[in-house]
Image (cartoon, rainbow, N blue to C red; front, side, top):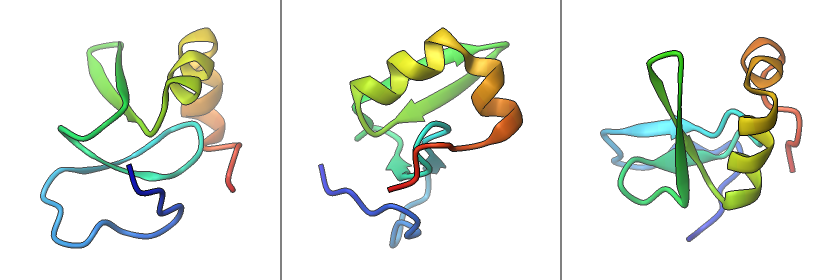
Length: 68
């Protein structure tokens, strides 16, 4: 998977922002996903999913904190 932190996905209809690192993640090509309060969140990698699952409210309130 190509990492493009802070760059919008070209031609992507279903682009999402990883709530942990801020990377653009294309739905269907995500490394992982989680459900929280009825919403689906998409992740660039398993590490971001694990961090989100431990403290989802932190990332939802503060935004991405692991920008690279």
